Image: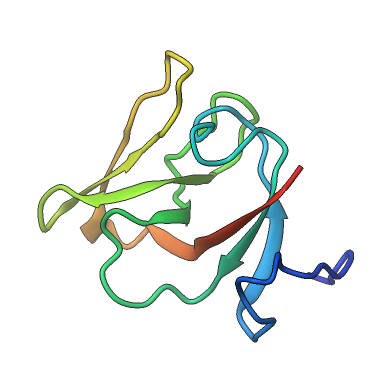
Length: 118
């Protein structure tokens, strides 16, 4: 995709290849990311993923607020075959997304680096 605009990080991260900004919509991560916030992401994700806030794609993900097969959640390896994508919200009703990691359909696209603001 083509870039829509250029932004400057808040001074914590220097511009580099693999960084991009996306606007996140929804309340499932509102303890860390306000609804509508622009966030800086880094791709590819290297090292252990557990405990990190990641942008993930999977055909079984259906965002209850906006549809689509992408989500930003806290990644947790439950077992060698199972992962959980956990919300971090003070709004009731959001549940973890449990996925089979060995089916090859889980794509970790990027890691949250910084919330830039709304």
